[in-house]
Length: 85
Image 1: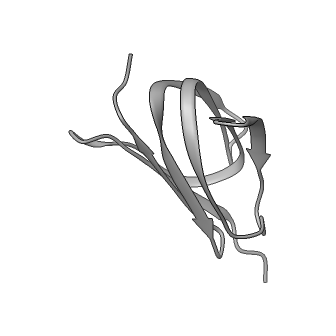
Image 2: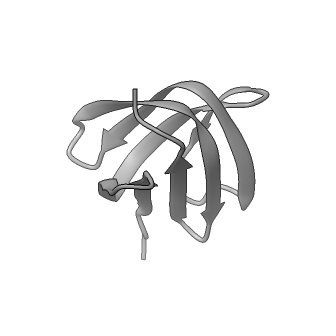
Image 3: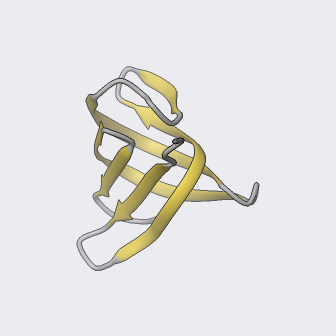
């Protein structure tokens, strides 16, 4: 059984993305990094930059943020963004 990486990107106002993804690249405070399914558990702060999401359908989307926080655990990735530019 293969379980997809499930992503939620949340701002204080709304959920701006929700669904299974193939790849997520984020602007971590110590540099950019990529998350795929079965990623090791991680909590990280984010700096100003772009979040790149490639959906299961292969469509690439970008979300701008001014910082935030992410948590990835058991193929569930939650990204809390301070605000969208």
